[in-house]
Length: 631
Image 1: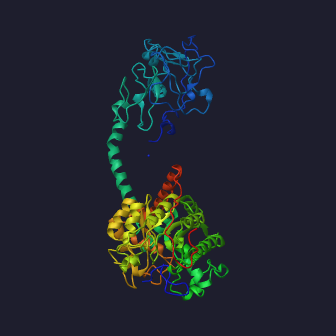
Image 2: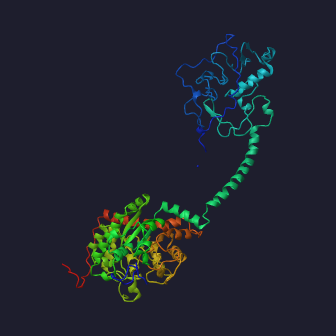
Image 3: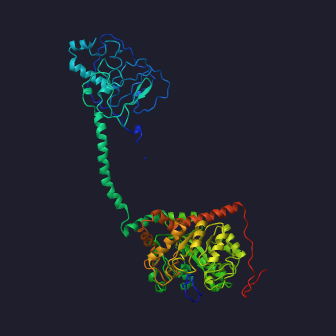
């Protein structure tokens, strides 16, 4: 945060997937024949050599699907299990099962044949076929009795077409010679000698007798010839239809990219690392929250409307699709060694009450789980970050108290040095050339932050302090609002060697929108901010960059990023670059920070299991006249 001098001193910012076979209906193209074969064997006194099985046998005619492999039961090779055929509406018209009978010459009919009457005799007998009152001794007698010729041949064909066995039928062949369809989807499953036969797909059936159909061109040949042609035509048609649709789904216009961003930000929360609204609440209304309607458009309400430092309210946060916000509990450097601890506690109180008073939109969270839950509930997760190590009053007890109140990061310094860490301003002024980046107490602060599960924030610190902290910490760190020094040579920004160390640490640098950190002057554009994002990505990697705008603590904003409603514009503009994928945008928006936060919690949990005790180190005595001293 950066504010000009005022009643409270300098501000927070330095202003400078085969379908299963069971699901396919079995094909039975000949079930519709109305003719019923007459029974002659009954009139001649012939006994049915294959009587009906006794009650209690399972009627396998009820089965419509079978596995493709061999039956698991042990079945003698002479047994015959005929397949039932679909197509009978009247149960009395169904042929009975022949399970357990020892001849494969018995061919069950599906044309209304009754087992108690007629029968089919063994193929070694010249009497092959019996009809009505005329029992045929051989095929010649059939012709002589007048129930023969084409009519008998037709009856025979009807029978054979419905018979599931592989009998030769005295020269008339078997059902495979009468097939007129291509059974590629589902095999014609007819159990023969305990084995399920699968007909060859789209090929000529093997002939065991003469028929007119065998002299014609097989439909399977046609199917085999036409299939590749049909496949090619279908592919061309499908491609012609789908290609335009695929092209239409690519975000071409800025509005389409905005639509993509809106969808992405429902999947992951957009997390901003730094916002100084709480300090403006103190500065404008003296923390009197009754005078602040955060659900209104503060851009039209005085004194907010007249201030260049005001960019935040709930309507604009919603428009910006913000999923989580770190609110800064900032106190000026002028309060160091005075009432900095008290002011910090009051600012933490303001943040907590803002969330409570606007519970329809905001909810205070202190963990990764809480943040994710808030986003799922459609609320803005509110987190607390203490900005400036001087707020501790050189006390680790105060740090633990801040954590207990919900603070989840500590910025080691602000625009002033502490007795244990050097700030970026000190680096600029060369006042701390010989000082280490962190003193022993400063290293103890970092270790205690690790033990608590609190993020170490290195914005505002000197390069020496950045390096010292990265060497000391056992958890990933963040830069809550710092840009790339290679593009803007400000000590507030991060040099490339530190960015590479940050990648090794698995931390994240969150890019701010303050123009003086982007272009080092008072003007900048949205593409200048993108340049910093891309630079950090190129040096540290896509997993180590985030967003930390710093709104309400800056008075110069880039064109296109004027307030908290503009985040979607930034992300949509990034999508213009083909090198940016949707997954990349998700990482920048919030996944990177979530990963870091989760790892910080993991370190905390590991240290708790190891029973690591709180750090008891005491800082050197403060000689300020405003302190009681050490007892």
